[in-house]
Length: 168
Image (cartoon, rainbow, N blue to C red; front, side, top):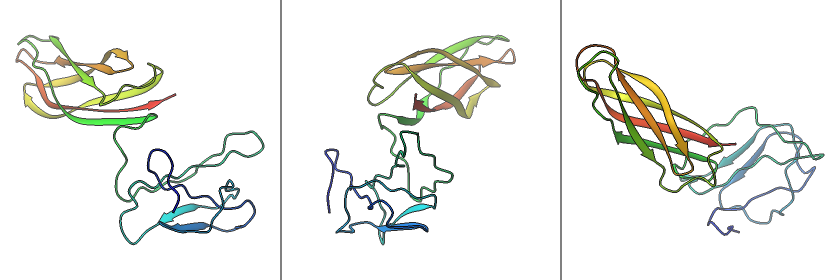
């Protein structure tokens, strides 16, 4: 079993070897490091959770490959260089006035390389009042700032703020 520098299992299949769907078992050996070139589905199979298994779509003829379907059976890592997600950041409480706003800074475990990513955040569960998502007010490599807005004259607060981001 070959692992890359990050400890992921590196598995690839020789070009032209498969014309139908491809299924690899975690820990497979004897495969080369050529790219996969097939229009059929690619799957990673394992008797146990395939945590740490890396799957990629090969580029052919200098064009970006495409993936029409992806099923993740266990989880998606929360702190990759291209995809991050975080949940459970405590929400802020607004003042008790219609339209009052407050902000919550959501910090990634490790920063992106730069601020060129698309982030989306939402409030989860309500602690008080009638809070609504006021959008992101700031974005840097290490964090985003989420705004909570009160829609009534009562103080409003989401219990948690959850975010996901994809690097461009």
